[in-house]
Image (tube, helix red, strand yellow):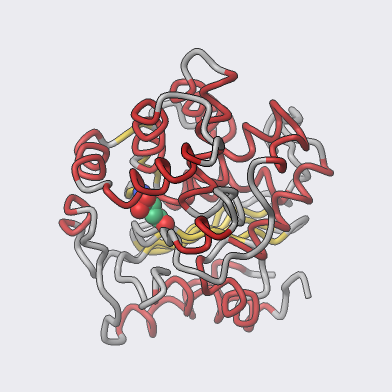
Length: 304
Ligand code: GLU
Protein backbone atom coordinates (compact mmCIF):
# COMPACT_ATOMS: atom_id res chain seq x y z
CA UNK A 1 0.00 0.00 0.00
CA UNK A 2 1.52 3.34 -1.02
CA UNK A 3 0.26 5.46 1.88
CA UNK A 4 2.15 8.59 0.84
CA UNK A 5 0.49 8.55 -2.56
CA UNK A 6 -2.92 8.14 -0.90
CA UNK A 7 -2.30 11.00 1.55
CA UNK A 8 -1.09 13.23 -1.30
CA UNK A 9 -4.26 12.47 -3.24
CA UNK A 10 -6.83 12.77 -0.42
CA UNK A 11 -5.48 15.83 1.36
CA UNK A 12 -5.70 18.68 -1.22
CA UNK A 13 -9.44 18.48 -2.02
CA UNK A 14 -10.29 18.65 1.68
CA UNK A 15 -7.74 21.42 2.31
CA UNK A 16 -9.10 23.45 -0.62
CA UNK A 17 -12.79 23.03 0.26
CA UNK A 18 -14.49 25.73 2.34
CA UNK A 19 -13.90 25.24 6.06
CA UNK A 20 -16.97 24.05 7.90
CA UNK A 21 -17.36 23.96 11.67
CA UNK A 22 -16.20 26.16 14.53
CA UNK A 23 -12.97 26.23 16.52
CA UNK A 24 -13.75 25.44 20.19
CA UNK A 25 -14.08 28.63 22.20
CA UNK A 26 -15.58 27.46 25.51
CA UNK A 27 -11.96 27.14 26.62
CA UNK A 28 -10.95 30.67 25.52
CA UNK A 29 -7.28 29.85 24.94
CA UNK A 30 -8.22 27.25 22.30
CA UNK A 31 -9.99 29.90 20.21
CA UNK A 32 -6.62 31.47 19.26
CA UNK A 33 -5.69 28.56 17.00
CA UNK A 34 -5.83 29.25 13.24
CA UNK A 35 -8.75 27.37 11.65
CA UNK A 36 -6.91 26.57 8.40
CA UNK A 37 -4.30 24.41 10.16
CA UNK A 38 -4.49 20.86 8.80
CA UNK A 39 -2.04 17.99 9.13
CA UNK A 40 -1.93 14.20 8.93
CA UNK A 41 0.65 11.67 10.08
CA UNK A 42 0.39 7.90 9.58
CA UNK A 43 2.79 5.36 11.14
CA UNK A 44 2.89 1.88 9.73
CA UNK A 45 3.67 -1.17 11.86
CA UNK A 46 5.72 -2.59 9.03
CA UNK A 47 7.86 0.54 9.28
CA UNK A 48 7.43 3.87 7.59
CA UNK A 49 6.06 7.30 8.37
CA UNK A 50 3.78 9.08 5.93
CA UNK A 51 2.66 12.66 6.41
CA UNK A 52 1.31 15.84 4.90
CA UNK A 53 0.46 19.41 5.94
CA UNK A 54 0.96 20.70 9.51
CA UNK A 55 1.83 17.24 10.82
CA UNK A 56 4.72 18.35 13.03
CA UNK A 57 3.05 21.33 14.73
CA UNK A 58 1.91 20.78 18.30
CA UNK A 59 -1.68 21.40 19.37
CA UNK A 60 -3.79 20.79 22.47
CA UNK A 61 -4.64 17.08 22.55
CA UNK A 62 -7.52 17.62 25.01
CA UNK A 63 -9.65 14.48 25.30
CA UNK A 64 -7.21 12.30 23.38
CA UNK A 65 -5.25 12.35 26.66
CA UNK A 66 -8.10 10.36 28.24
CA UNK A 67 -7.01 7.21 26.40
CA UNK A 68 -3.48 7.54 27.79
CA UNK A 69 -4.48 8.14 31.40
CA UNK A 70 -6.98 5.28 31.10
CA UNK A 71 -4.21 3.00 29.78
CA UNK A 72 -2.09 3.87 32.84
CA UNK A 73 -4.93 3.30 35.30
CA UNK A 74 -5.87 -0.01 33.65
CA UNK A 75 -2.23 -1.13 33.74
CA UNK A 76 -1.92 -0.22 37.43
CA UNK A 77 -5.27 -1.36 38.80
CA UNK A 78 -6.68 -3.81 36.24
CA UNK A 79 -10.33 -4.80 36.03
CA UNK A 80 -11.36 -3.24 39.34
CA UNK A 81 -11.53 0.21 37.70
CA UNK A 82 -14.82 -0.92 36.13
CA UNK A 83 -16.48 -0.86 39.54
CA UNK A 84 -16.30 2.93 39.33
CA UNK A 85 -16.74 3.66 35.62
CA UNK A 86 -18.59 1.74 32.88
CA UNK A 87 -17.78 0.75 29.31
CA UNK A 88 -21.03 1.75 27.57
CA UNK A 89 -21.36 4.53 25.01
CA UNK A 90 -23.09 7.48 26.62
CA UNK A 91 -25.13 8.76 23.67
CA UNK A 92 -24.86 12.13 25.40
CA UNK A 93 -22.53 15.13 25.07
CA UNK A 94 -19.10 14.66 26.68
CA UNK A 95 -19.82 17.01 29.57
CA UNK A 96 -23.43 16.05 30.26
CA UNK A 97 -24.66 15.93 33.86
CA UNK A 98 -28.08 14.36 33.35
CA UNK A 99 -27.08 10.71 32.92
CA UNK A 100 -24.64 10.94 35.81
CA UNK A 101 -27.42 11.97 38.17
CA UNK A 102 -29.77 9.13 37.33
CA UNK A 103 -26.97 6.57 37.21
CA UNK A 104 -25.88 7.41 40.75
CA UNK A 105 -22.56 9.07 39.98
CA UNK A 106 -21.04 6.19 37.97
CA UNK A 107 -19.96 7.55 34.56
CA UNK A 108 -20.95 5.58 31.46
CA UNK A 109 -17.37 5.29 30.21
CA UNK A 110 -13.82 6.62 30.83
CA UNK A 111 -13.69 8.76 27.66
CA UNK A 112 -16.34 11.29 28.67
CA UNK A 113 -15.38 14.01 31.12
CA UNK A 114 -16.94 12.43 34.22
CA UNK A 115 -15.27 9.09 33.47
CA UNK A 116 -11.91 10.72 32.85
CA UNK A 117 -12.22 12.54 36.18
CA UNK A 118 -12.72 9.19 37.94
CA UNK A 119 -9.62 7.85 36.15
CA UNK A 120 -7.65 10.92 37.34
CA UNK A 121 -8.86 10.22 40.88
CA UNK A 122 -7.69 6.59 40.60
CA UNK A 123 -4.24 7.67 39.39
CA UNK A 124 -3.91 10.20 42.22
CA UNK A 125 -4.70 7.43 44.73
CA UNK A 126 -1.85 5.31 43.30
CA UNK A 127 0.87 7.77 42.33
CA UNK A 128 2.84 10.50 44.13
CA UNK A 129 3.09 12.65 41.03
CA UNK A 130 0.52 11.45 38.49
CA UNK A 131 1.08 14.27 36.00
CA UNK A 132 4.84 13.62 35.79
CA UNK A 133 4.18 9.87 35.54
CA UNK A 134 1.66 10.41 32.75
CA UNK A 135 4.11 12.64 30.87
CA UNK A 136 6.91 10.07 31.31
CA UNK A 137 4.59 7.32 30.04
CA UNK A 138 3.75 9.36 26.92
CA UNK A 139 7.36 10.44 26.35
CA UNK A 140 8.52 6.86 26.58
CA UNK A 141 5.90 5.48 24.17
CA UNK A 142 6.35 8.28 21.64
CA UNK A 143 10.13 8.51 21.98
CA UNK A 144 9.74 12.31 22.20
CA UNK A 145 11.21 13.61 25.45
CA UNK A 146 10.10 17.24 24.98
CA UNK A 147 6.33 16.60 25.12
CA UNK A 148 4.82 18.87 27.75
CA UNK A 149 1.87 20.96 28.94
CA UNK A 150 0.63 24.30 27.64
CA UNK A 151 0.21 26.21 30.91
CA UNK A 152 -1.99 28.88 29.34
CA UNK A 153 -4.48 26.30 28.11
CA UNK A 154 -4.54 24.61 31.53
CA UNK A 155 -5.16 27.96 33.26
CA UNK A 156 -7.84 28.91 30.75
CA UNK A 157 -9.64 25.63 31.25
CA UNK A 158 -9.43 25.98 35.01
CA UNK A 159 -10.88 29.49 34.89
CA UNK A 160 -13.87 28.28 32.84
CA UNK A 161 -14.14 24.74 34.19
CA UNK A 162 -17.45 25.15 35.98
CA UNK A 163 -19.13 22.22 34.28
CA UNK A 164 -16.27 19.85 35.12
CA UNK A 165 -16.46 21.16 38.69
CA UNK A 166 -20.19 20.35 38.69
CA UNK A 167 -19.50 16.80 37.40
CA UNK A 168 -16.90 16.06 40.04
CA UNK A 169 -18.95 17.51 42.88
CA UNK A 170 -21.90 15.36 41.82
CA UNK A 171 -19.70 12.25 41.79
CA UNK A 172 -18.19 13.15 45.16
CA UNK A 173 -21.73 13.36 46.58
CA UNK A 174 -22.28 9.76 45.41
CA UNK A 175 -18.97 8.65 46.99
CA UNK A 176 -17.24 8.00 43.65
CA UNK A 177 -14.30 10.41 44.18
CA UNK A 178 -11.70 9.57 46.84
CA UNK A 179 -9.35 12.54 46.69
CA UNK A 180 -9.58 16.29 47.08
CA UNK A 181 -11.76 17.73 44.30
CA UNK A 182 -9.37 20.56 43.39
CA UNK A 183 -6.43 18.18 43.16
CA UNK A 184 -8.34 15.90 40.77
CA UNK A 185 -9.59 18.82 38.66
CA UNK A 186 -6.08 20.29 38.39
CA UNK A 187 -4.65 16.98 37.22
CA UNK A 188 -7.49 16.66 34.69
CA UNK A 189 -7.00 20.20 33.33
CA UNK A 190 -3.26 19.62 33.00
CA UNK A 191 -3.63 16.30 31.21
CA UNK A 192 -6.04 17.88 28.69
CA UNK A 193 -3.51 20.70 28.13
CA UNK A 194 -0.76 18.34 26.93
CA UNK A 195 0.45 19.42 23.51
CA UNK A 196 1.52 16.99 20.81
CA UNK A 197 1.85 16.99 17.04
CA UNK A 198 0.21 14.51 14.65
CA UNK A 199 3.63 12.89 14.32
CA UNK A 200 3.94 12.43 18.09
CA UNK A 201 0.36 11.24 18.48
CA UNK A 202 0.60 8.71 15.66
CA UNK A 203 3.85 7.33 17.14
CA UNK A 204 2.24 7.09 20.59
CA UNK A 205 -0.93 5.42 19.35
CA UNK A 206 1.05 2.85 17.38
CA UNK A 207 1.22 1.05 20.74
CA UNK A 208 -2.48 0.22 20.29
CA UNK A 209 -1.87 -1.19 16.81
CA UNK A 210 1.00 -3.28 18.14
CA UNK A 211 -0.76 -5.25 20.93
CA UNK A 212 0.61 -2.90 23.60
CA UNK A 213 4.30 -3.08 22.65
CA UNK A 214 6.54 -0.14 21.79
CA UNK A 215 7.55 -0.78 18.19
CA UNK A 216 11.15 0.48 18.45
CA UNK A 217 12.13 -1.45 21.60
CA UNK A 218 9.60 -4.29 21.76
CA UNK A 219 8.86 -3.36 25.39
CA UNK A 220 5.39 -4.42 26.51
CA UNK A 221 3.52 -1.47 28.08
CA UNK A 222 0.08 -3.15 27.97
CA UNK A 223 -0.84 -6.80 27.50
CA UNK A 224 -2.52 -7.72 24.25
CA UNK A 225 -5.74 -8.38 26.18
CA UNK A 226 -5.61 -4.90 27.77
CA UNK A 227 -4.91 -3.37 24.36
CA UNK A 228 -7.87 -5.20 22.83
CA UNK A 229 -10.15 -3.84 25.55
CA UNK A 230 -8.88 -0.28 25.23
CA UNK A 231 -9.35 -0.38 21.45
CA UNK A 232 -12.88 -1.67 22.01
CA UNK A 233 -13.66 1.25 24.33
CA UNK A 234 -12.28 3.71 21.77
CA UNK A 235 -14.46 2.11 19.11
CA UNK A 236 -17.67 2.39 21.11
CA UNK A 237 -17.01 5.55 23.14
CA UNK A 238 -14.25 7.61 21.48
CA UNK A 239 -16.35 10.21 19.68
CA UNK A 240 -18.78 11.66 22.19
CA UNK A 241 -22.34 11.12 20.99
CA UNK A 242 -21.07 10.52 17.45
CA UNK A 243 -19.28 7.23 18.12
CA UNK A 244 -21.76 5.31 15.96
CA UNK A 245 -21.33 7.76 13.10
CA UNK A 246 -17.53 7.52 13.28
CA UNK A 247 -17.71 3.72 13.33
CA UNK A 248 -20.06 3.77 10.34
CA UNK A 249 -18.04 6.24 8.31
CA UNK A 250 -14.45 5.27 9.25
CA UNK A 251 -14.61 1.75 10.69
CA UNK A 252 -11.65 2.08 13.06
CA UNK A 253 -11.27 2.65 16.81
CA UNK A 254 -10.08 6.12 17.73
CA UNK A 255 -10.42 9.19 19.90
CA UNK A 256 -11.01 12.85 19.23
CA UNK A 257 -10.41 16.01 21.24
CA UNK A 258 -11.86 19.52 21.13
CA UNK A 259 -8.44 20.84 20.05
CA UNK A 260 -9.34 19.38 16.62
CA UNK A 261 -7.19 16.26 16.82
CA UNK A 262 -8.35 12.74 15.98
CA UNK A 263 -6.33 9.54 16.31
CA UNK A 264 -7.42 6.28 14.73
CA UNK A 265 -5.92 2.82 15.00
CA UNK A 266 -5.86 -0.05 12.58
CA UNK A 267 -4.74 -2.97 14.77
CA UNK A 268 -1.86 -4.82 13.15
CA UNK A 269 -1.54 -2.19 10.41
CA UNK A 270 -1.11 1.47 11.34
CA UNK A 271 -1.98 4.44 13.55
CA UNK A 272 -2.96 7.79 12.10
CA UNK A 273 -3.40 11.26 13.59
CA UNK A 274 -5.25 14.13 11.91
CA UNK A 275 -5.49 17.72 13.12
CA UNK A 276 -7.89 20.40 11.91
CA UNK A 277 -9.33 22.72 14.59
CA UNK A 278 -12.88 23.50 13.32
CA UNK A 279 -15.35 21.12 14.99
CA UNK A 280 -18.68 19.79 13.79
CA UNK A 281 -21.76 20.26 16.04
CA UNK A 282 -20.89 17.08 18.01
CA UNK A 283 -17.40 18.37 18.85
CA UNK A 284 -15.34 16.28 16.41
CA UNK A 285 -12.94 17.77 13.83
CA UNK A 286 -15.02 18.15 10.65
CA UNK A 287 -12.09 17.81 8.24
CA UNK A 288 -10.55 15.08 10.39
CA UNK A 289 -13.68 12.92 10.13
CA UNK A 290 -13.86 13.46 6.38
CA UNK A 291 -10.17 12.66 5.86
CA UNK A 292 -10.33 9.42 7.84
CA UNK A 293 -13.50 8.34 6.04
CA UNK A 294 -11.79 8.94 2.71
CA UNK A 295 -8.66 7.09 3.92
CA UNK A 296 -10.44 3.87 4.85
CA UNK A 297 -12.62 4.08 1.72
CA UNK A 298 -9.61 4.56 -0.53
CA UNK A 299 -7.46 1.87 1.08
CA UNK A 300 -10.38 -0.54 1.43
CA UNK A 301 -8.94 -1.44 4.85
CA UNK A 302 -10.80 -1.23 8.12
CA UNK A 303 -11.43 -3.62 10.98
CA UNK A 304 -14.85 -4.55 9.57
N1 GLU B 1 -10.68 19.67 28.47
C1 GLU B 1 -11.91 19.52 27.77
C2 GLU B 1 -13.08 19.61 28.72
O1 GLU B 1 -13.03 19.09 29.78
C3 GLU B 1 -11.86 18.21 27.05
C4 GLU B 1 -12.98 18.10 26.11
C5 GLU B 1 -12.70 17.23 24.94
O2 GLU B 1 -11.68 17.31 24.28
O3 GLU B 1 -13.59 16.42 24.70
O4 GLU B 1 -14.08 20.18 28.46
